[in-house]
Length: 592
Image 1 (cartoon, rainbow, N blue to C red):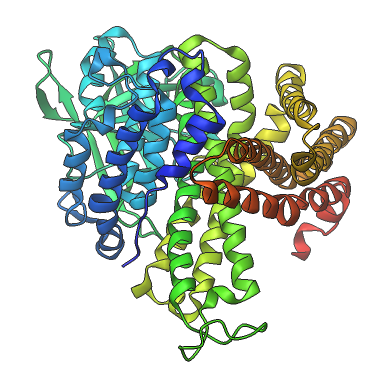
Image 2 (cartoon, rainbow, N blue to C red; image 1 turned 180 degrees about the vertical axis):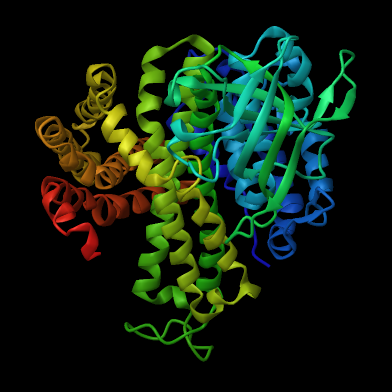
C-alpha cells in the first residue's frame, strides 16, 4: 500500500519564511503564528495519513454502487467523513455566522492539499460543498443563507454544482434545463445533468444541488442562464427535512479514476428550486464557485504528484537494480539502488522541483484570495484572476506528467495495481479535464484574462517579477543562479504577450493556436519566481546560521535544478507561439 507523508515542514517554510503570513496586513493573519499553524497542520496531517490515506486504495478498488436510487460509497468512507465533520475541518474557512471557524483560506488550502493528496476521491465531497457554500454565501438571499448554510458548513448536508448536459459541456449557452416560475416564488426545475460529482451518496442527510437552468422567456444563450438551489429533500420552515424533491440519480458513470467519488447522471423532474441572485445572472454566481473550484483542481493535480513522488523516491532508494556507472555503491548487495542512476535522479528531480514550487504558487494564490475577500484588495483579485487558469491548467498538466514519471520509476511494478501507482495516474488525469478542460483554460487566459482591464493585471505581474529581480540583483549568487534565468524567462513571456497583441486582432487563430504553449510558458515563469523567492529565503536563513542547514541547502539545490533544467522550456514555448497559426491550421479537416 502506498504511503502518505504530510509535507509539514515545507508548508511552514512557505507560509512563515517565504510569504511571512504572520506579518501580513490581511485581517486575521495576525493569528497565524507558527505555533498556531503548526498545531492545525500537524493534526490535519495525522488525519490525512492515518484516516484518509488507508482508504484511498480501497475506495479505488470498491468504487461506488447505485442501489435502488441510493449511491453506496466505499467501506469506511462515511466514518472518515464523520471524522472530518466532527473535527470541524469542513468549516475551517467558513463564516462563523453559519457555524464556520472563520480561518483564512490560506490555511484551509494547506490543509486541503494534505487531505486531497491522501484521498482525492473522498475529499471531493467536502470540497464541492465548500464551493457551493461560497456561491450561496456570496449571491444568496439572507433567507437562503440561513436555511442552507449552517448544515452545509458542518457537512451534515453536502453540495454539488450542476452545469453539464448530454449535448453541451463548455458551451453552456446550449443548455436546455428549464425553470418554470411558481406563484410562491419558487421554480420547477426540469432537465438532465451529467458528470455531477457527489450528486448522490449515503454520507449526508441532504444534498444541496446548485443547478444552472433557463427561465422561459429570458434572453438567448448564456445571458439567459439562472442559478438555483435544488435540495434532494425539501427543507421545512423549522429546518427539518421534508418530502423527497423531484431529483434523482439515473446512473453512475464508470470512470478511469476517482472511483470512490460518485459521478452521477442527475434527473430533475419538476423539482422545487430557489433562485440564487438575480434572474439571468446565473453564470456570475456560478463562477464564484467555479473559480474557487479551479484553484482547488490545480491543488488536486499537485497533491497527486506529491503523493506519487514520495512513493517513487522511497522505491528508488530501496529497489536494487544494476550498478552505478561510476563504481559500485552497494558492495554488500547484489546491485545498487535505483537512485544511483542519473536518469532516475532526473525523473525524481523533475518531480521534486515542480512540486515544491507548485505548492508555493498555490499558497501564494490562496493568500491573494484572502487579501481580496478579507480586505477588498482589488489588485490582488485582478492578479489571482489572471493566474487562476495557470494554476488550474499548468499545475494539472504537470501534475499528471509527474505521476507518470513516478510510475515509470517503478518499472513493470508501476503498471501493476498492487503497487498503487496506477491510481495516482488515473486520479490525476481527470484534473486536466473537469472544471474547464485545460485547453479552455488556455483560451481563457489568452482570449480574456491577458487583456482584462486593459492588460493592467498582466503588467502588474511583469512589474512584480521585475521588481523582485531589481531588489535582489546585488546578491551575486542569487543573481547568477536564479535572477538571470528568471529574467530571461520573463522576457520570453513578455515577447509572447506582445506577439498576441500585435497579431491577435488581425489573425485570432495565431493567438489561439499558441494558447496552451502560452499557459505553460506563464506557468514556468510563475514557478521560476517562486523558486527565486524561496532561494532568497534559504540563502538568508543559511547566512543567519539556521539550525536545519540541510533543509535550506536542499532548497537551493532543487531550485537551481529547476532554473537550469526546466525553466529554459520557455524558449521552446515562445518559438512555438511565434510560429503562428499556419502550421496548426494548414491541414484540411477531411485530411485528419
